[in-house]
Amino acid sequence: MINETQLLEEFTWRDTAACLKHPATLFFGFDDLEPPGERRNREDRAKLICSGCLVKEECLDYALAANESYGIWGGLTEVELKAYKRALKNRSALSI
Ligand code: SF4
Image (cartoon, rainbow, N blue to C red; front, side, top):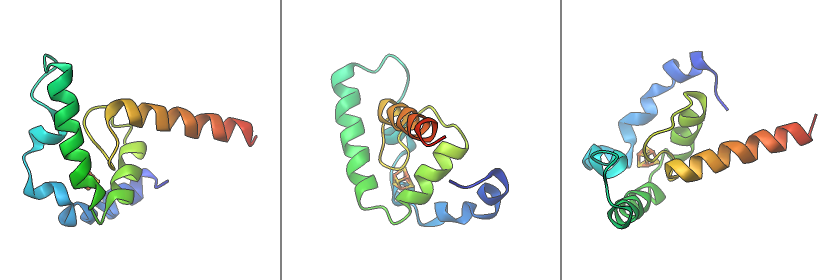
């Protein structure tokens, strides 16, 4: 995982992000009123784009370091990102 200083210095990864060619609403939705079926469909389309992204790992590292909790990051939905964070936390607790 990268720290805050590295976050700012290494922010150039966004220049090659596959999502730059797509509307941000595909990754963040319009609002909280999005019907669940539409949301799943939108998230699946966004994740498909993420699957071919060259900076997926950097994106996920950024989301973890910045504690992002909204939108698709590193190919993970909000729910998946929360679960991933929990798994990392549990894993680090076990290794103490
Ligand atoms: S992995 Fe991150 S940078 Fe790449 S397309 Fe997905 S949201 Fe964008």
